[in-house]
Image (cartoon, rainbow, N blue to C red; front, top):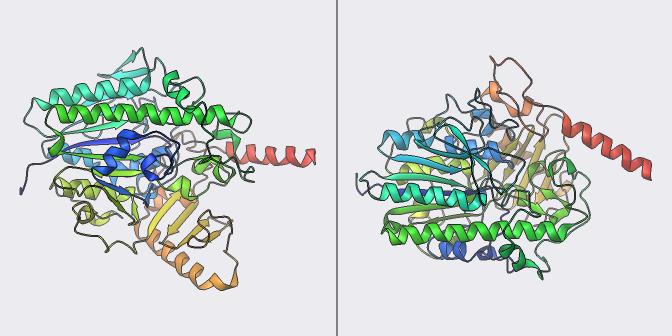
Length: 480
């Protein structure tokens, strides 16, 4: 190999909107450590999740596959089920890292079911058993056993990750650690240290305007008081981000202290985006029914940094996706991927090394959430909903907030048809017919079972969102 294999620290947040970073132009939110990390590397302005909800996005990051290849199409309703492994048979980059001599660990949210069993090449396994989004005194899994912890979840995840790094610093093997925070996922009110909440007592939250409720807004996937008490919920959301940022700072300081920073690649991103009132939505892709593909839902903050290898202080506008992460990390570590030809993504290592400033400027990105699919170019976005719509088309150059649907506009019919054809061809190339989300009744209210030709037992999806939305519409009509 041409160089020493780098250590990798992969920090993943949960439901952090692309706007929820100081260095991304938000003057209200306090993220000094992430801002510093961006100054020490490359921040991407157009990084997209593969699906605007947690589990499918996390599965794509690990496997490089789209949801219609790996079969995870929604958040997992029963994450502690010890009998289901949603990624069985799908190679994760952590397995390839382990085969190449890395020691791989995870601290925090797994989110892909069966929290009790170490999977996908991880030998260190400290995972969170979801309990409704609470942050204090969580139940974690260590060595296959549930442990009732005391303290603030974000701090506990950091402490465990730092212990792993401390141990590995004494070894000759390279290491990989997934630091998977639950922040800033709800709950927000009363769930975060007061010292962070008080920072936002006087914040006007102009970056999160509480716009009129979106006609598709789905209360089912949000705390019930986000519309009636937005200020306290915003304080909690911002506090969760700032508390997480403080903990990222602790990890950066440790890497410096242990003289590991120069040989450690730090990756930071969120699993999916999020809106806090912008566009009349609180939530992500399933903050509405039908599910949405708005920019705040499908874009994620993304920062990559390694001193001496990645240029510092750069902001890049290339269109990249989470399905590009696996090929990039493997090439970064000089590890071959025998399945590369079957995967939709490609490595953006030339960009990370400052050698590829322009070649991905016109790359198209794709997204899916069950029967909802998106194709996005630098200027245009087309959204297709199987089987009967509604369909959307936006000219983002003229309408960055996606307020005017131009799907039927006569001046854009050529662009609409071009993007639809390109979308169809791309998914035809990569979809596994047994996992095809376009033919599954995904509503945004969770997945309870595997999908595929040989799966038996309970249905994988329910119709809660559709029934709830119908009831909500009837109630509105009755009030008129």
